[in-house]
Amino acid sequence: MQEVFNKYKNYLGVERNVSPYTVRNYTTDLSGFFNFLKTKEISLLEEVDRYVLRDYLSYLMEQGIVKASIARKLSAIRSFYRYLLREKIISTDPVATTSSPKLDKRLPSFLTPQETVRLLEAPDLSTPQGLRDRALMELLYAAGLRVSELVNLDVGQVNFDTNEIRVWGKGSKERMVLMGQPAAAALTAYLNQGRPQLLGEKRSGALFVNRYGGRLIERRVQRILEKYTNIAGIGKRVHPHMLRHTFATHLLDGGAGLRVVQELLGHANLSSTQIYTHVTKSQAKKVYLAAHPMAREKDKDDEVV
Image 1 (cartoon, rainbow, N blue to C red):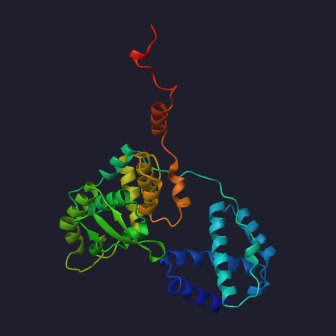
Image 2 (image 1 turned 30 degrees about the vertical axis):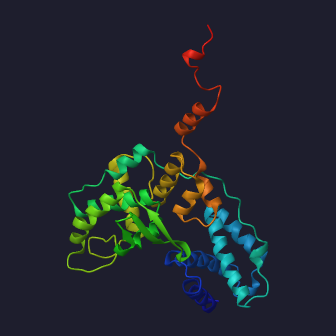
């Protein structure tokens, strides 16, 4: 079983070209599943059937694992068994008849424009770390980047003449994202003043580097956001993906079309973008008052004497 598992991990990284982050998640989820099989004294992949999978899902629920995590774990198992079927290691796929738990629909959380400004203005621009942190937060918000896309950026991918950035997203799909003048200005200040100090005598193509001159990692970006969330006094748990949510929400609230937002986010399916079609209460009220004929106040000229 371990040999097959190792070949599967190699398949994910080489043939499917998924990110190291995804390989790590799949490895963790499948390791948990294999440990469960050991407790059931199941040592052969062929011994796993839909009843074993149902027992595993019940076990996860008893452990208090949330539905979204259970669905993700089942997705990893499903991918693994599809690989086994393709390689003719098994003859039937037990996961094909196993349904994922129905997820509760939740709207993505986002920052208000006022909260966004407070967050972006929190860094101390007299330090190289502050210049870097301002630039990376501006970029997350201005371009709607995934954190994995942000940390993998190289300096050569940024075009300041057009304020465009070439990004490789999920599945190594290339797309162009845009940044506004505030983000471009913050990035320029970081490249001219902050990054040289962080690099010292080291050489690197990485756009965002740590204090030792190495490429910034995703976990560090999360900690940076937590730091400035506290400084800005924002009573929410702000994470990198929330700035992506905020980017999409503010665009739609400002009148951008769904297809445009889909392209900027790099979503393969429009359904992934449609979760952002919610609007803030103030925007909904504004649209209602402007559009509903019986909601508008009558002009004085229209009053009947």
